[in-house]
Length: 223
Ligand code: DX5
Ligand code: ZN
Image 1 (cartoon, protein in one colour):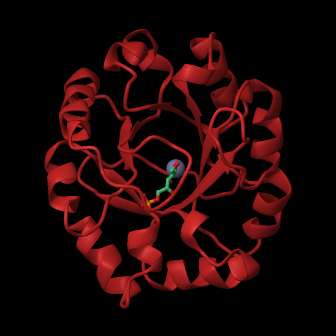
Image 2 (image 1 turned 90 degrees about the vertical axis):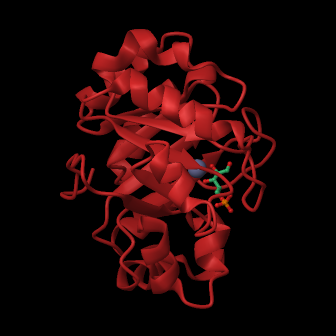
């Protein structure tokens, strides 16, 4: 965990660029570029080739990156049985750890463990997963991540039903200090819609890294 654990502010929209679309050969420099462009969090996509059909990175790379940024690390675990690695991700420098509801038969226990480790506890819902999956764990949650594509790859097309899903989650969390994050296919073109639906943390990979003007793109996502 870093000293930069995020604090909830109901009036702020945050942008969390996903380094999945960064140049993996120079991730340290990419983090500095994001920080200079006013990114709020660094979104790190961890994939195991089982929960999703792709492999990315794990704790050793996150640990190496921790020295290159003072921004909160928002670690999105797209892995089976995430409980096996929670402490490793905390030790590597994660500030937010998000697990998938579909990968956690004992979701309440997993979220409680993330908090016990000193991190913010997030849960992510795949596009096909109903919002009711989180109804009984609201008190154990700091963040809900609505997947607006099927997880596994960057650069996919936003699923329009996700706007409805965001609004449903927003209604469920009401005034609780829980971040509502959206991930997948978000760009300046649809950012106003996801914000209007209730999202206050916007993940964007390809939109940020393919942008000609990174600071302007991050600003446009914030609105
Ligand atoms: C998808 C990942 C996303 C992805 C977003 O499985 O969780 O974070 O990198 O990339 P874009 O913004 O390109 O859809
Ligand atoms: Zn992600």
